[in-house]
Image (cartoon, rainbow, N blue to C red; front, side):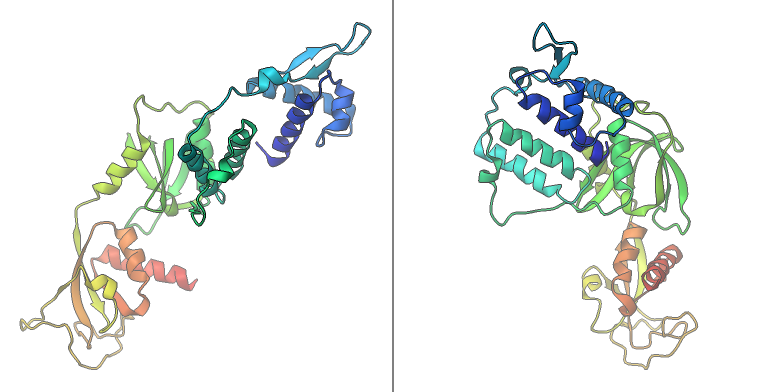
Length: 341
């Protein structure tokens, strides 16, 4: 729903809720901003708005203020609209208020603010229970977040190009999305991959380009008992089998990578860490001749996720050079070229 439409419907609800009398269409048109100048266009839009309010469960009544009225009017009876008394413990109200603040910069900010407004309207002073100095935020900077969230909400299948770990080319994927989950600061979408005929989890940061809807709303069926958070957790907890990376690390640098490293031995059986020979320019762009340590430390490090590990290595810049395996080296080069671009 667009912001303009949301504001118009909110204005209509406030107008009809605050009036003790039935308001005619002409009075509503004058009182509620956002309706077109043409009366015919207004009537069509107003009819759609009335149906939408009723679908939302808002009790919209039609009636006459007196027997002499020629035109029916509309109102929302307060006693039928007001929520029953809500009793929340201080910690429960604090959690709801905190949740609204968490989503302040994400796509759900409007919905979160609306929920908080309803709580205050019901007499729950959520602001008074917030904890000073605590303001976590979930950032949803990936362009894929919005359309994927809409796909989950409307149960619509989607298609997108996905660059899997260790692959230089993106592949087109078709997904029936079940949920969007944040885990350890990263966003994932889980669902049924029709191309693979299996449940799959995709990281939003690896989606390349636009997410497009590929089917009608309501066509995605989420299996009963599905726990999307658990699906993502299992996928993240049981990564692919570990592999070994061979790296050159500049002496005195790369401390974050050294903690999990094992020094490599040269052909003579000597530890190559800490050699003092002079660096030479190599054709591979690493600043080293092939087969030369050049004063760098040669180490091996276990890893499982090529994409994540390539991002991690690229963050060290020229202090760490990936040599093996080839797909890891290619992924690091891709990361560095992207940073340069």
